Length: 327
Image 1: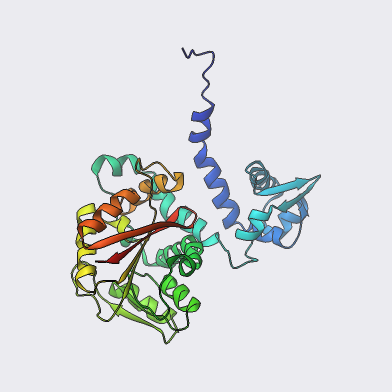
Image 2: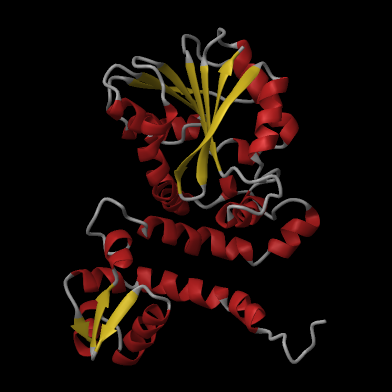
């Protein structure tokens, strides 16, 4: 039998102080701590000079990052850990700084109303209603969050050479770009809402990627494709809407067409992987119907909508891929 002498509140403190760790990380990122140490290890005076911070607050931020395992301290000199050097210093293509800005400027304020969003069953404001000056922060953050999965997709998807892919809800085209870069004979169409399609058209310069403006829920899908990609789209909608989407895609293609569903797929309990389980809260505070779904739920939808489930494969981080073929 458990007693108060064997149970401690350590887990509660660790979880409840999570916001402090997050804000310390966001602040260090915004203040350029990791970039400054990308120039090489530095003592406190040099670090303060590189960042323009007062010595006292430079120490507070740097020591917090040491405690969290993102900086190392050797004597009186601070240095980036390999993780910070790779993802936060700006020295490599694997740059997570935009994602941290997104979480700090957009997600963190919205998470203060998580209890309200869960109680109401919808957020106070959807992510689409953000101020114009935050739109680039959102786009860059989403691109950073999905960059690893984008790079992995061509090697995991197993699409036949020369596939004609319809990238539905394809954002600014990063998923399509990854596919066309990996296969010189593959072509892609990004199908997005007009305001996002305009950004994609400005950003994409490949002759093998076209952009088509339209609404997935109300407009006809562009014709002539034999592979379909829904990347981080299904978590915006209810199960019923997702099934309607899958039926709509099936009606637009022939048997044997491929379907790729990249998302934060979970186990049947919706608790693993942990980052995906936590992302359910992110969707709840940003989108009216946002949620995460299990692979088993996805497979059941596919079976009901004219698709044959063919596999579930990891991509990167908590994002994984469900594949299917039209029957």
